Length: 312
Image 1 (cartoon, rainbow, N blue to C red):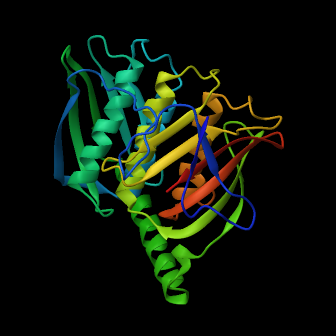
Image 2: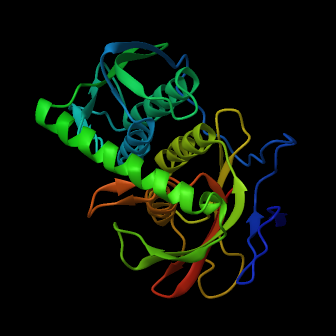
């Protein structure tokens, strides 16, 4: 079994070394062990409505990755039989996926990838994202509709107040310390979906392009979707839309936890890293402080080291 060492991951506490069992790509921008295959002919048509309402990009990004992670729990070939709706945090808007024909959960997950990359190209650099309607097609025909709608008037007013407060806080923080976003830090977080799963992390002080981080996490959901949650042998590198940012998770190579990491734990861990480390989302008060920075992390279950990963 070969060993793939991630550059710039040595810290005072640990070093991430990724043992991979499949052949690596020769692509110089990303090491791809296995790339899930999208449904044949997957395509999206998006109609934006800038005159209606727009949202903070980070709020939309957080919602799209989270929705994809939730849908990735279901068997990939199982049909999506009902409308699924999700709420964007802070903005309090709802977005929907409306299935047609033989739309499967796998196609639904891929739909969020296709939509997210389209948004990232159309509105890069954290530009505000307007409401939109979109349709997903494959060679089999129309599969689903993905829409985000204007929040209620009351929700919109609350959002305006929150956004103003967040902006003031961000300005004060930037004025006090212009290097805050790149200051090295480490610690431990706990996954909300499974409190037994904790993640020990180390930020590396190297800035990443926000939209590439976003699309790397979107891509990871296509990996989780194609694997049963109880499967072992976790080994994944999910690349961003331009393959310059990678999210990797793998089992540890040796020790008592070497055969404990299942794909469901990997999915939960990726979601926790996205919510708590990258997006900096907090429930009370409901705030978000994204950190677009390379990070390495260890996965521990009930105190036992079972996996490792990186965002680089």
